[in-house]
Image (cartoon, rainbow, N blue to C red; front, side, top):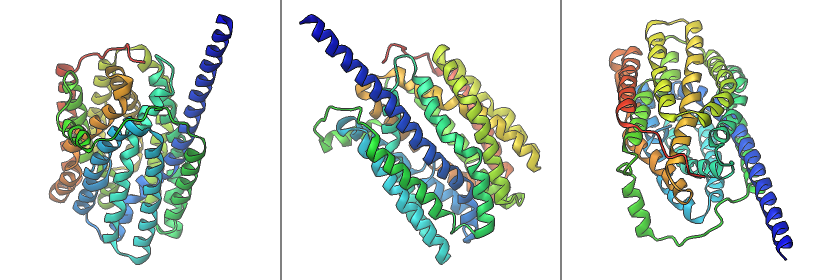
Length: 413
């Protein structure tokens, strides 16, 4: 009898391990497809809005509504993280794809009708698609073996970066040849493939289903306004990072197009150089994160923003901005996996998705006005004003990391 039980246990473990590997493959494939269209969108979005008559302050305002740290992006992650811990991860990954598909359709219509006001609906939907980010982070962590979270996060990150080696250059060239309107259906088709892949092959990692109490949801959202005890320094530092980079780097493509007349194709080449550099660095850095203290890596990563901003503030040539993309790639390759791994090690598995949602909610609430402020600074002082503000923010975040962030508990699975 004991032999049969042992065999059944072993078979169950093997099945579980196979499912984990399959999930990581699906998550990486999904990241590849989404990375392909996102890398093109990030290059053409701000020049596209400028071509429809939007100003840089308006672009900053739209980014503050539904951009990387926008208010809709922020709220969606808080709700999505709390709900994903109770009803599962997969539904939110599927819903996010549907939001993205409709958003790209709206952008194509906006370009065809030459009405930049339609951008608002698309931006709101793209912001709401962020509801899947906590679920994706939690599912990635749950599909990794103990002690390999940095490598798992790096795998999905590399998968999203690989298409960015060529896609932004091709997307910029395509926009130059056929116009922005013709590019958005291509992006839509790529997200349809990502949706089909997740719908068919992704397996849920959160089997338990908990009752949803709207009062508890409201309390969870309110909890996100303040950082959790024991993680306050970490939350505040990452929020400061989001705020400072959104003011400068978050508007870089529009500012280069408007200030130095960089072509969309040149912006695409810059993005490709960044993606290639990031992809080459990410897996070795992920293994490094798994083996070393996290606080030191975060300080090193944020400090790289100092020479990067020095380049952007003193140079105007396309070649120097290409050099800056390599340095930015190193900054991002160290920052993203170390932040995800830090939070993974600091909370229990049952609270993980909500924790990612809380982090994204908190830093989003702090950072959402930053792009709008960056646009106002640009209108007042040109490209140097938001970049200088970005540099000041980097110094502040480095100080916060050194003074207020401690090493996390490494015992979480």
